[in-house]
Image (cartoon, rainbow, N blue to C red; front, side, top):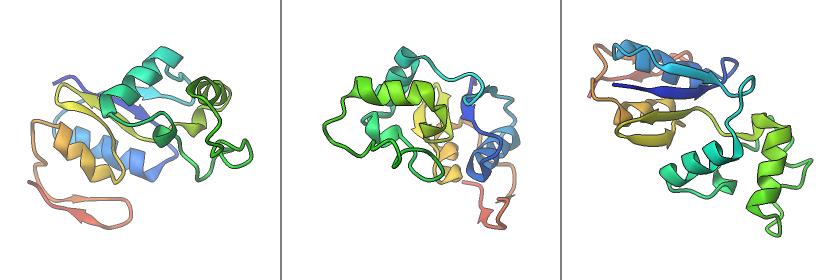
Length: 134
């Protein structure tokens, strides 16, 4: 199974999702999107495949979202894409792509819906929460 994760190694949720993918026996393609952001077209494709709006794929917490006024409903997708191009931290994370679909995996255990192989044993997230195999 081919898996891609748009990953931020500074994010616990992203690290947990990556660890669950690896626990399922898969070494994913890791895109550290802060270093290598998706192109405008790639981001629009991901959003379309998730079946959400571009605005819904933006992260507010810990980003310049509020300072940039991105909650303004008058802003177009082009305006939002311009902001993301300047500040890729605005992309919600992690985004995981598999043949079974594309999701923003928040909480991290949503990644399990995209994997063919279940967890081999209970998974303990960084915060101590236990995710049981399905």
